[in-house]
Image 1: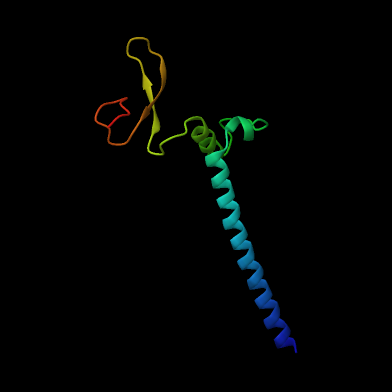
Image 2: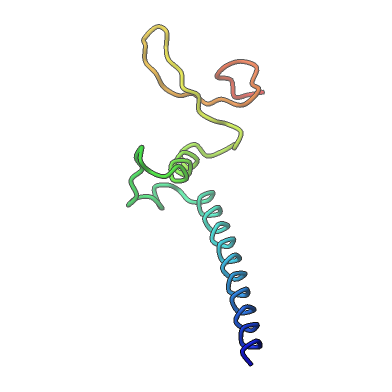
Length: 102
């Protein structure tokens, strides 16, 4: 009887591990869908993003602010004339700097 009981416990533990794995997959899908469709001002009003925030939160904030093509990313630039720095949008393999049309 002990062998049968141990086998049943092992099967139940495996089922539980499978369920937990599937649960994680579903949670990741939910997070992905929410981050792609919601506005940062609706979802992150009570959340403060800082330089110590997790990378995933920073990326979610950036994507919510700069929605659109996933192939566009920021590039830090500095003005030779004024010395001011900032960011401009850039696409990979673009022919001229700052040009978003290709």
